[in-house]
Length: 261
Ligand code: BTN
Image (cartoon, rainbow, N blue to C red; front, side, top):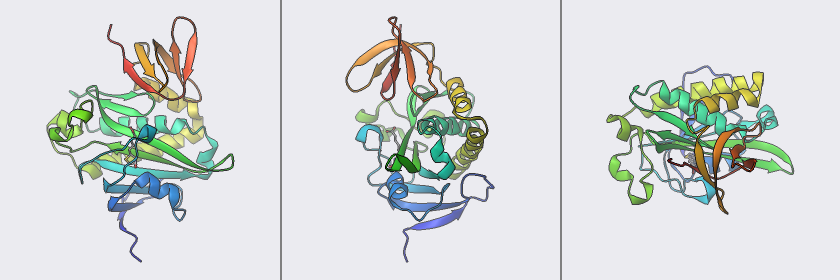
């Protein structure tokens, strides 16, 4: 049977992730695949060189040129469904932050942006989409999808992608995608251990340390209104806490920009 993928042995011993990775040269969406297919055990990683219908947040399309980006998803099941689902975008962002920072030159500045982006020198380099499959009120599985712009040339970031960048664009050199992927997966496996041993709070603390907009004035657009205030922290359930001067407001989704003063 032609499955459409080849199996790559990552040759890494991990406690929570599978070392046999499914590699597609092309697929519609790695998130869609793991959400719909039930034959793959928890910890399976699916990587694609190209997605014809890559999914982004708020129903947006996630675009990438063939072979240039890291486009991958991980399915988590069973015990991982017992944690707050909102911790997974934060955990994945910390995994990318730690993994990518371990290879980046010191001259670059990587930060996390609530809820699930990473910025390189102030521009979006990575987006994360966490989705779950529920049976009634019970979570059957959750899928975290990561799109990391690695080798896209500057021309890729046309007018509508002008606030995005790639690792290549910021460092001036082409990168081995597998080397970065392995670093990120290593970190992800480690963070999943920490989550099980110490709970969501320890992941939130790590995320907060990687964020440079905390304590600053931000504007948050939740799709209905734009609210300004001081970004004071992340609550236990992953919500953003904003002090507007008339008390603390809580947001579960939205686009954040730092207000220049
Ligand atoms: C965002 O809008 O910022 C989230 C983008 C997430 C894109 C990744 S690429 C791999 C995985 N498969 C998808 O279809 N989407 C996610």
